[in-house]
Image (cartoon, rainbow, N blue to C red; front, side, top):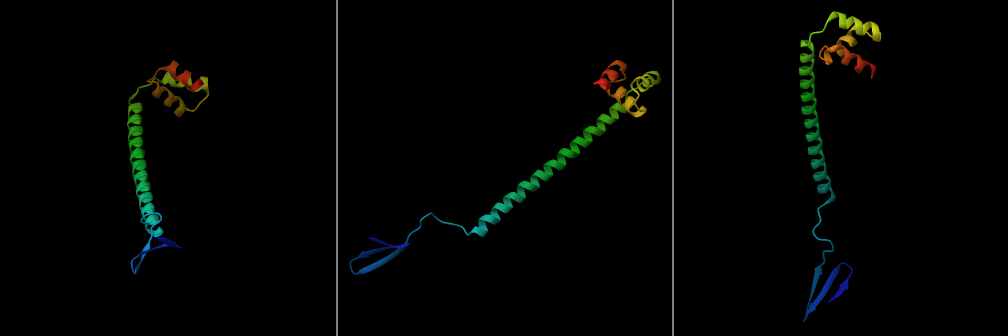
Length: 114
C-alpha cells in the first residue's frame, strides 16, 4: 500500500482500490459546534439570571421582615434625644440605631461610635 496525498491506494491483483483516510475522526461543521456552544451559554446565562432574581427576591423579603421586626421595637423618647444630642445626628439615624439594638442605649451609642 502506498500513500498519495490524503488517499491511500491499495492494489489487489488487477484491481486498484482507493481509500480515504480520516486523520482526526468524525468532525462536525464549525457552525454546529458554535451553535451548540451558544445554546449551552444561553442556558447558563438564563439559569444565572433566574438564580439572581430568586436571590434578590429572597433578600428583599428578608429585609422587609427585618424592617417589620424593627418597627415593633419600642424606644424611649429620652434615649432618642440623648443619642441625637450627644452624637449630633438626625432623628432617623438615632432611632434606627436604637431599634437595631432593641432599645439598648449603650449598645446603640457604641455602634454609632464604631
